[in-house]
Image: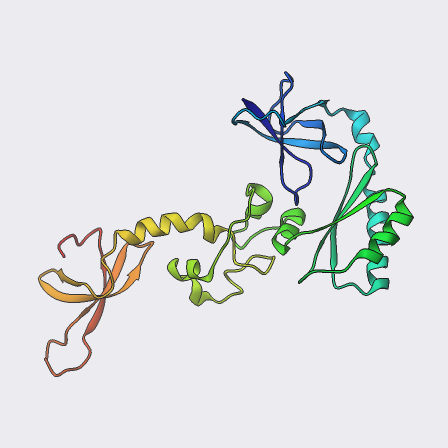
Length: 267
C-alpha cells in the first residue's frame, strides 16, 4: 500500500498516513490527526509499505485558514520568552530551542537540550497554568538544534542535517581515522553543533571500498624492480608509502617513497 510520510516538526519523528485518495506530492502541506492532536504537516515522501490498518488517513490539504490558526512569529517569541523566564526562575539546567503549537490549540510542545535528565515537573505546572492547555517538554539532541536553526558547514554549503539528512546515525572517531583526517584536530572535523560532522558517516562506505584496493600495511611489494614494504596509505589518492631498504646496507632506515597504484600495477 502507498503511505505518505509527513513531518510535523523538524526535531520529532515523521509520521505515516494513508493518502485517502488525495493527490499529494513532496512539499505539500496537509492536515492530519495524530493520537494526541490535530496538526499541519509537510509531505516528505510517498512510499510503498506493507498493509497497515492502523495508519490514519490524511484529512485534507492545508489551506490559508489553517495557517491563520497557527500562532505567528510574535506569539511564538512571546511564548518562548515566558518559558525561558520560568526556566531561569526554577534554575533548571536546560536550553530552550523551539516551540510547536498544534493546529487545534490543544497542545504546546517545547523542545529543549540538556546534558542529562531534568526534573521539570514544576516548570510544567508554570506553563500549564499560564497557557491553559496541555504542555509537552521534548528533549532533543544538540545535533537536532543545528538541524532546526541551520547554518553553513566548513564546505560553504547548507548544513547536511538542515538540507537533506532525515536520521542521525552514530558517528565515531574511528571514521575520522579511517578517512585520514583525525590529525586535523577536533575543531576542523566537528560541525557547528560541536559533534563530529555528519558527512563522516555517509562518506565512510566509499572510503572502505577504496581502502580495500590498497595493499595492507607491512606487505612486501615490487616497484620498478625494487623491493620494498608498504608503510602508509593515501586512500583518496589511491597511493601508498613504500619503504625501500638502505642501499648501502649499513642498517640505517631506508627511503620512503609515495607510489601511485594507478601507475604502478607491478607489485
